[in-house]
Length: 178
View 1: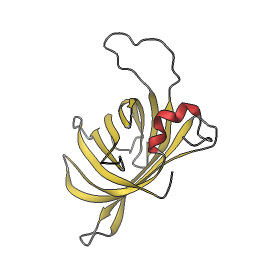
View 2: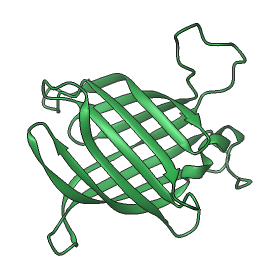
View 3: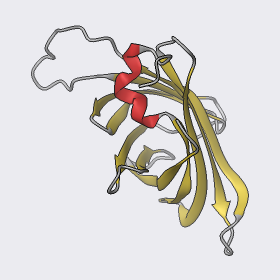
View 4: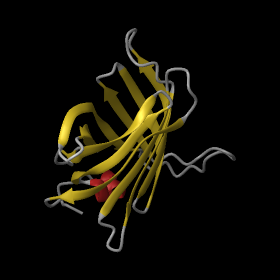
């Protein structure tokens, strides 16, 4: 791990860097389409959180980037170890994530980190009066491949009166060094 990365971030260091790739999106009332995406996880020397940015573009038929579909940004924080055992039936929470969306909603996630995998679900969702009426989300992020060189993720969303269902998923490769 980079000496400048805060020790609390050791569990998340596998995410550090800029990632690019393609994925598929669609929802109950949105026809499925292919998108290109950039995700970046960065840190500020000595601070106990990661910054997160993501941008996704609809892919044109010839494989080039088209119109911007969405952006999001936020912060990923690892909870300090308390030493206390969770109550029976309660999940272990290692992670708190804040994500803001230009479509007028913000999400607060609680999640777990195991090896090179993150699973998280919303603890709260707040939206503006004119924002998308999202009510819940669930996300998985993890490295896979022979050398763990691919970052895959899946995002399930509950919005516009629908229950939690698949929304976006992608496979991304690290661009440049950590």
